[in-house]
Length: 250
Image (tube, rainbow, N blue to C red; front, top):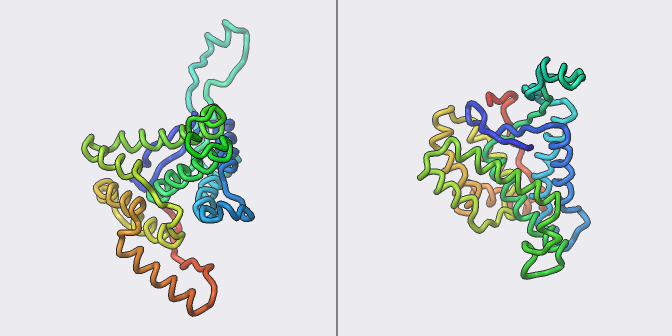
């Protein structure tokens, strides 16, 4: 089963699972992604690209390019002797990391993309989330598990009152499809500059910077800069180059 936990220094979340868990999760993320030629849902293409960035790390994890974990599976010599088999005493799990603000953005984006996929599956404008084709869809169930695991891992480190505020932020009405790549990069880098204790204290503040980005002065400033670049160069395909740290102390 897919599991999530906050990293030791609260830089982000650690996502872990076995080969099949990660393989199925990658397939599910691809299933809800928006194709470049999908003009009907083109407004959601940018957040789909962001989600595929998470998908990239998960795929490389189960290919062995990230962290590999060994966990005891309950097998021992007595059980092997009883069943007449030789079996490993540990299972292999894979793990990758995602910066905290990035993960909040991905969870909101997945929610939007699930809505679009549900509408397509059910062909029902009003009751798509309760349609049997949606309720029993394997990929959507896997993605809901990912989201619920994210909620649980944040709950474990938050005091009840702070968690309640956090939960209201991530479960409210979102317009995450309007957020810019450059702004998310800016927030990620800003968050990583904080020390461990400050990250924990400002978890809700940075959550709000993502969920209610349109109120953030930094977002409005960045938006003005991008608009100016569009006017100067005559096209809209701009993303400010922001440098992430070479190594992250997760």
